Image (cartoon, rainbow, N blue to C red; front, side):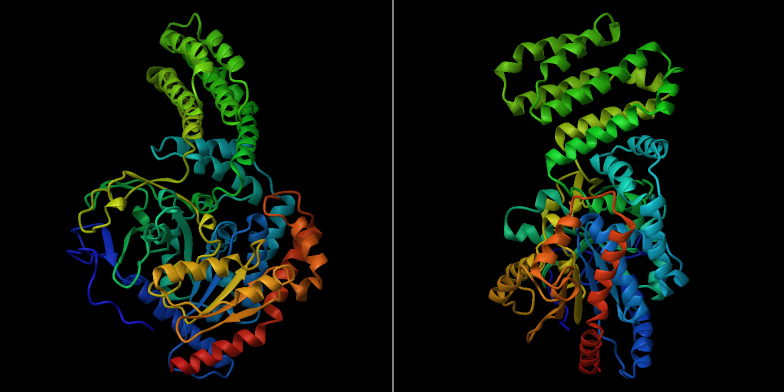
Amino acid sequence: MTDKPKHAAFSTMSQPGKQDERSNISVHFGISEEEKVAVQNRGKKVLMALQKLGINTKKSPIVSVLVSGGGLRATIACQGVLTELSHLGILDMVTYLAGVSGSTWCMASLYTQSDDGWEDLQKAEVELQRRLREGSWKTFVALDGLCKAAERDDYSLTDFWSYSFVYFFTKELINTRLSQVRLQSEMGTVPYPIFAAIEENLKIGEKEKTQHAWFEFTPDWAGYSTLGYSEPGTYVSTTYCGSKFEGGKLIQQEPERDLSYLRALCSSVLADKDAMLQGIMDFFKKLTHHSRTQASFLITEPDAGVTLKDIIEELFNLIITFLTDGDCLPHLESLQFTMSGDENFVEAAAFVAEIIEQLSKTNKDEQNQLFQVLLLKTWIKDLVEKSRVSSYLKFLWKTNQCLLTWTWGTMKNFMYKYGDIEAKHLTHVKNLHLMDAGLAINSAYPLVLPPVRNSDIILSFDFSEDPFMTITETEKYCKSCNIPFPPVDKDRLKQDADAPWDCYVFEGEKGPVVMHFPLFNRVNCGSAEVIEKKWQTYETFRFRDYSDDEVIQLLEDSKLNVRENKDRILAKISELSKATS
């Protein structure tokens, strides 16, 4: 374990916590007081689990389980891993469960379970299989959710992703909030959950900014983790995450986002932009051409509201065409025709004429700016407010706006104008833009390593197509941040890349022991040829039409990685238990 630093690079006038009325923000090293209680109580359960195996120790090691990204493949494999860990009694020894991207889809479901549900995760596995086999995506449910989301001023494409893609793939919407898991986690009845994301504006660039990019969500606090041994983390209560702050004070409280949104935020963007645009276009058509939606417009008043709806839908076609490098002229001409003769859109129609004239004389960026101005000119607030479907119109318009700016994961910056820290690049912007941490490292190593949580052993279940990228990227990250991490034999990993073994153990004089488990390997597949076939079957961007047999096989492959290495895992935990006594 590493001692806390005596001096901080950030100026911290106080250490705000749950009872501090001076600020709603907490600046602290390591973990919060609430998390310390949860870890302490979880430690008691871990000790009991160790004693059942004849391991007598006064202090339990900190065992962290990491589950990586990998789309729906990761969701299914994550469920298999956790079910088997539970079956073997190892999950009771785990203090932290940290997930990225596709694995958060599974985690979000599991943390809605009661304590009894965690005793037998086989039930959750059966329910996952049932949903994938029988579940359905209901258009009117998705649309209702999107209309409610559009009432928020931080609506982004992540909202669209949540109610279209993620809901469609998982056949599940979760209304539970992460803060509602506090009692379970505080009592230590479940592993303490950590959902990982990154701040888009910080994910690329200078080395010192890369480590600032990691953003965590826990039942108690959400924010930027402790950075190095001289910089504390900066957090806001999970309940208030997304509310408006200025200077450390809560200005306007917003409802806490639910786990459906959180898992969407943690898993955006999975595909490349072109594939994503095609998917957005498909879902947009499903949502806007649904019979219930069309019926609602038969009673829309005034008539100009219907015109506005038609215009916004045509704008969507224009924007998608623009973003996919298609011919925009026919859509502009259609817009001009729809607007003509309606006094509400005289100015907008004139501007469309200007765009048509300038289209061939402007570059892509200039055209984008013109289309953004056109959106503003077509937004007639009075018509929207008078409409009986104003939320629907807001959803249509805001989705168009977010498409042009490619805006994801918008969240009000709780550190805006907060003077107690010196990291001004984190305090001068009103909004954060959080997204898939897999764009940095496809596993949440930075959130369980020193000096954040000082894990003694990390069980890393990696569902990535590259079996070793998370290990090599983490080693580079740790070197740049001066964080202890065991040495990695890159030559051996390169040699094993096409046919990895099912478990690799990395350990050194400092830092945690890391046990790394590639999903498809020589043990559960037998050969490099079978491994390659498995990756083709369960490719990252395949989100639907998994057969029952394919789901069952993937669950079994992931379970086998745990089962075959049970003795190695328990031996290492036993060894570390004696070392911490």
